[in-house]
Amino acid sequence: MGGVAGVFTAFGLSGSAGLNAYLPLLIVSLLARFTPLVQLREPWTALTSWWTIGALVVLLIVETVADKVPAVNHINDVIQTVIRPAAGAILFAASSNALADIHPVLAVVCGILVAGSVHLVKSAAIRPAVTVTTAVPSGGAATVPANIIVSTLEDIVAIVASLLAVLAPFILALVLLIAVVTIAWWLLNQQRARMPRA
Image 1: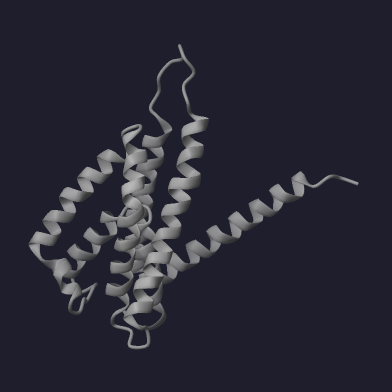
Image 2: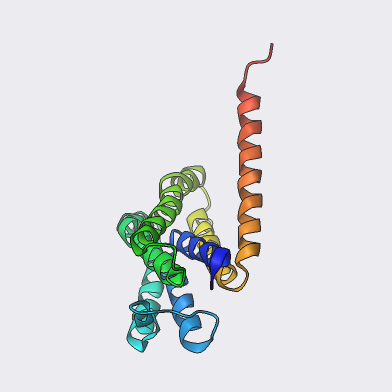
């Protein structure tokens, strides 16, 4: 990883950590241990130890289950408010440490900001909206809670984004650019729809 691709990789991995702290960490750990696709320098080589990989697997299982249990998922989001930005900082610093022109402190701050922003949008905007819009009225038929579906989709996005960040960072950047333009276009149309007509 080097140059602009390394920066895209760092942003992609730290953004994925905002959705699920342990998936991108585990992906980077496994790729660094078993493939030449990810080259980590000290102290980040600790991510490739069996102890770290085992701990990440256990933490991933706990977080994945907790994120899909109603009420527990809100507690999990509060706990993850610290963990996800920290994971983003580790991933940004670990994946960008090959770039000589990025200071380690700047890398950590960028990782915290990227992962923290994604987590904030997820836990403060998306999840509460999903919970409110899918509440089952008393006496209504129970269905699969939308939080489970949304959480599963978030996990899938975290996996795909992490893999793209490592394997095809420019494609990830293009996908993100398209997503940002689409969201901006949608918000602009929503604002125009709300404006009073003359």
